[in-house]
Figure: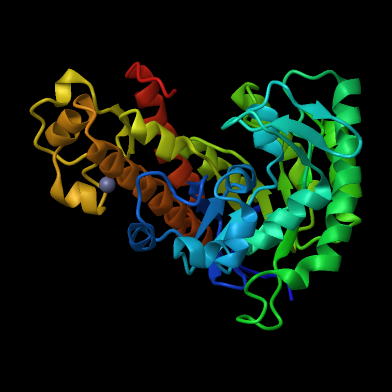
Amino acid sequence: MPLTYTIDAEFGPARRGHMQLPHAVVETPVFMPVGTAGSVKAVPQDVLESLGAQIILGNTYHLYLRPGHELIRRMRGLHRFISWPRAMLTDSGGFQVFSLNELRKVTADGVEFRSHLDGSSHLFTPERSVEIQIALGADIVMVFDECTEYPADHGRARKSLEITLAWAVRSKAYFDAHKHEVPWAADLPGRTQSLFGIVQGGMYADLRRESAERLVELDLPGYAIGGLSVGEPRHLTREVIESTLPHLPKAKPRYVMGVGYPEEIVEYAGMGVDMMDCVLPTRAARHGLLFTSEGRLNIRNRRFAEDQGPADPECGCMVCRRYTRAYLRHLTAAQEPLSMVLNTIHNLAYYLDLMKAVRDAIAIGTLPSLLARVRAVSREAAGDNTTVL
Ligand SMILES: [Zn+2]
């Protein structure tokens, strides 16, 4: 049995719900921290649990290259290997093959690429990507897709869409034939992974609609909107999400890949998105950029040198309860490894608490005021001349 998804409350197009996955229940809308190579960088698993992370991402491309999916299969799957008892999702590797490889070669069969580690040659096909994801054993796995670059003209975006749809059909055929091979099959009898489809189509509403409608014919347990955060202006990201969502089934979870800033994830949840992931809170933290209820702070700024307050006076995380801005600034300026740990823990706490506030606001009907509050501090942050990466 794949996942079951239940809607518990609605506010306009927004929904609060929960997904029953093989390893855990996940409340939605949910933000998923990115754990690229079997680790959410700088944060131990017990801390992720205490922050309320319900589901984390693993990365097929990175784990396939190192330590290798067959090793992880022998360790009885990624959950056991990294000691994470809650839910996990793996991407298909498509995005990394496109973003990390200048020398990739796309054919109808798949993508040839060179390892960014040692230059060795590899081939990802839809079947191979799903085979690796079954060995890793995440609760949710993704079809292999071609992430259309930006900008791409209509003809190029259509060609890319056709490749992605053909690969989705092949991904599903392989998944249906092999899903019983997941390493935890004997531990969780009757449970299977869930394969999600990915809508592509560049920045064109007609292609996004066609991609969604043809993908939905495959009757998958959930659908993602991919090909965003590839360098397009932020208003285009929102327009593509807005024009695609009505073509995805209301009764199934809808996932937007690779977004976004705090004000964006609140807005997209308000539009009816159930799942989001982004490297922003973790990557920004490693550069000393903190998300707070007062807006974004560049903790390196000299004005924090003797600031005795916490990073965020409204945050109850273990970092804000114990350490001052002055100390976080010192650690970051001195490039102490602890600065990455503490900054990342706070940023994840901010994102995870924000999504909890979104779920509560959907249930009690206060989503517009929450969005207004988050937008107001984001404008202040912009005026603060703080840049994010
Ligand atoms: Zn905090």
